[in-house]
Image (cartoon, rainbow, N blue to C red):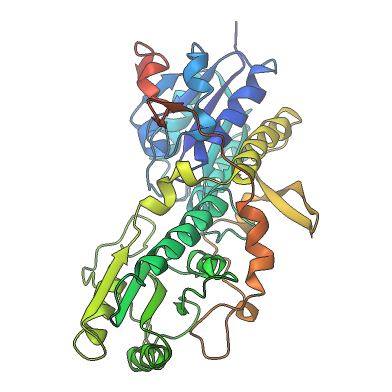
Length: 414
């Protein structure tokens, strides 16, 4: 007798709340007539290798920790599936696997590249008359997905960045000497993350002094002059830069001179702060620190936004409800109705409208000098960092879920 099963995958860079979306999917599936729940180990790439885990017999104690567990607990990948009219091999492998597992519903949590996968798989299923409902669930700390007001993961990363910049700025005041801290945050193509550091600027503390984003042309000479002006006003200067800032020729400032790219053609980034530091050190002052937040900004679940967790969960839950109603090839998304009081509604948009596209930071949020973010941006980002995460603790350390604790003997390979 044919069963009615579902398959779930996570893809792309993790966030602090991506497992909340996973829990939202699982909880809603459990309340439906879907029989079994399977998970892809390491996204679509793992599924193509037959690396599947049975989540149906999960340990409820570990499952309850998902909301507060950072990173992709199922594992992730950056795998670009080819167009099926050019190469059908991946489609044959994946759909044969799903047929063997009686998969009727597929949920894929990811960013714009992952929505490309949702779009292609949905088109293939429709063309081949395969009974499969496929839904995308958004995530990315970069906040660059088209069609959604903001992305799960962004609010938590913004909270971590703003908090850390506040702490760094305060540390810069401890010595009565001139000093500069250059903080590098993620953001290959957009400055949403760097812009969130404006939240560190309060009535008690003016920081960061300068913010540079990829949407605007970056000039090293202008940067030096900007820092010089600030140092004439104060002894300690804090600068935030996106990893993806570019010069007038479109070249990355990043120290990574390699030509290595991922399978979606994205150049591997990092090192902008360390490139900029020597322009200041020895010329304007001797104490210069280059600080790269790196994976901390996407893994800091202890600093997660309660609202971010709630919305991530809700988007997973609503994806299941849409699939149960027969909808497919869509991504659940957030539409903001108001700031005060903060209200949103869940909408659904075609995955093709999100796939491989980037939502840039609007010019209105960038000052005329292209070296800081306007205070107006706070109205957009402040509601997203609200609420406590309610992190469970064990021995006064966060108690995170472990996948192997869910069901050690249920890993399947086909």
